[in-house]
Amino acid sequence: MNATSNLKFGWLALAFFISVGLFLESLHLFKTPFYFEHDLRRELWVLGHAHGALMAILNIVYALTALRYEAVGNKLDSWLWLLAGLFIPAGFLLGGVTASEVDPALWIVLTPMGALCALVASARAGMALLRHRQN
Image 1 (cartoon, rainbow, N blue to C red):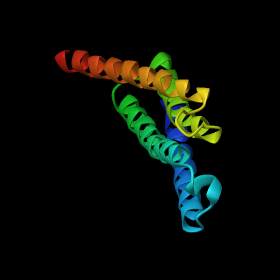
Image 2 (cartoon, rainbow, N blue to C red; image 1 turned 30 degrees about the vertical axis):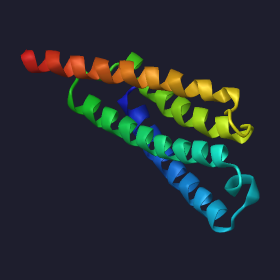
Image 3 (cartoon, rainbow, N blue to C red; image 1 turned 90 degrees about the vertical axis):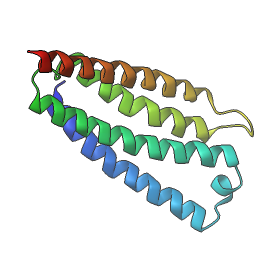
Image 4 (cartoon, helix red, strand yellow; image 1 turned 120 degrees about the vertical axis):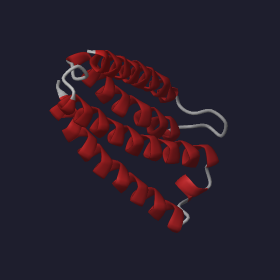
């Protein structure tokens, strides 16, 4: 993987999560019982949509940074951002599919795994930029 992969992923994921947002709004508009009458599902899906769009934008930002600063772009960081962009929203969205009234589905464990990927990747990028600045 390289920064170009993150750039492509970011733009495609952003289009996808904008579509998810439109879909969720239509479920809300038509008061669809499967969505509207289940508070936890609705909250998890909204969180999945929002975090998915955010992770798409962060993949784009990472890619543009990596293309600008050689010190930032490497395969590990690229993979970490891609995994974060997949795991965080997937955990929320899949966690809401078969959620009970009070507990999300087990898929929710993907979300903290993705958050850990994003934390490590962002720290690595920041450290790389600090080292670049000092040279």
